[in-house]
Length: 228
Image (cartoon, rainbow, N blue to C red):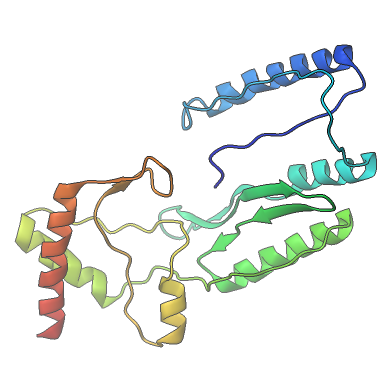
């Protein structure tokens, strides 16, 4: 998920640029208010540079790009209504990059169910076909859905005896390697577990040291129980 981005727009003269800047500022105010609850740090600025020398794409290509960005699914697509309402399918526009002769829009669709992932890919292919883009799918990993397996129960029992409190098992929506391992090793009892991390995959990422110590103690005890 992109942390920051910038775009350069070209207008015929300073007056047109001033008018566009005002429209952009009004939109920024609306978006800032929309994001205030869950992304209070959002900021966006507009600057006007006169007499800039740039290369601009033609109108047809620019319109196709705008349509693709507006129509590409971005956010929660489907929730698991049978359990806790956690996200089951999502997509996000991660990177939009321009070069001399092409524009790349990189999306990251995620699903815990492989069939739903395939259905979503089919939708993306259709969107690309309609707008005149080429679609390429790569770096995929299979879905991995939560099930009532032995691993979590062992962790819950160990955590209770070690620390005198209950361990909460939750399903989350993220990209993990567990699906790859489970597909390659049939019958694998896989869970994702680790210390407390904050602001993951950003320059502000941090780890709570006390939780790392607890996790190490927990992991050693679980392995002993499974080996017994």
